[in-house]
Picture (tube, helix red, strand yellow):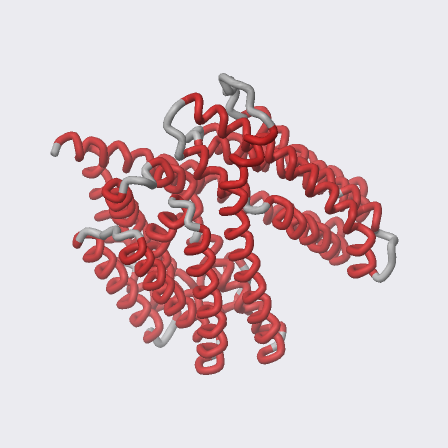
Length: 483
């Protein structure tokens, strides 16, 4: 019993440390991105902002196609190895695939450059600019492989430092280009930013790992096949989700106009980017930890229950604070014209709680390398999300999109839960389920109270709820860590 409590305390401390590190890293990256966008808007104007969007969009598209999901899928293979020799072989394979996919992506960008220029600008005048971006694809591929190695081996401090210094160095290098070169800095600054990120990753990469025996071309291809196939499933699922998201944006534009899209994008960004920081930060440590015990049903169940308990405790004060302060947060991050998004943000917090529950179970699918199950659950979820968005917006407007978000992740939790319970025969203990019901109940009560307030200022009467929740959570976390 004491040994189990000690292990739980150690895991809790490790999880919270990882969340602190990568939550801070993500916040820094967001801040750097906001400042960069502001400087580009001021110094380069709307045309510069537009060109950055066009060229970065092309890079993201080609990168997604060429990388085949390797950044995430290879983490599982590295983390799942148990002996130093097996780890060394897998790391060698991942690094080689990083180089191969980098070359493939660069060639693909060069080959597509004339077509991209004609489709986007109407002529071949930007062909050389697109060709130059092949360097970015190459750097990104190698950096992604090294980041996967760091994450899979649990070198999270190195990964955090590489991310921080990459963002800072990229910012420092690119800003003078904006100022001195103006609109001509767009492509060179994208290249410089990617080179700075690559350099930081290379400096902090895990060193001293050499396979004890030669790893031939055949083994490189056959070993890489495992994570490439999983990556293909992940890439396909992501493509379907992005395509259906675009379908909804196009539908909303035709139905409500660009103003409604602005409200939706503002609300969705606040819900996913800022509150979603918790999930991004925790996943960095959680995913490889699950991959290491993927063959043990008992240990998987224990880790999922532990993660769910932690994430629900962290979400309770976070979502109730967001519900209470949503109008003021919108004014700070946007302005008063975007207050129409407040009901969307408020109601969507119930979906964040359900997202926390489903998040803990969904990573089991990836940890097991079950690509078909992942593609199926994500595709069904994306289709359901599209239907709910259209139906709820038609019924209740922008606020209805908050209802759609909450119902979407409730349905997603049920879908993933079915896979978790039926396909894998795993379980969740009663305390985890009770905590989930409690967190959702408090969140729903705060949402109803906030929506019923006759004025914005009266929302502050809810503030004792997140304050008390924060005190209780801090107290419980301290007890958990000190066991």
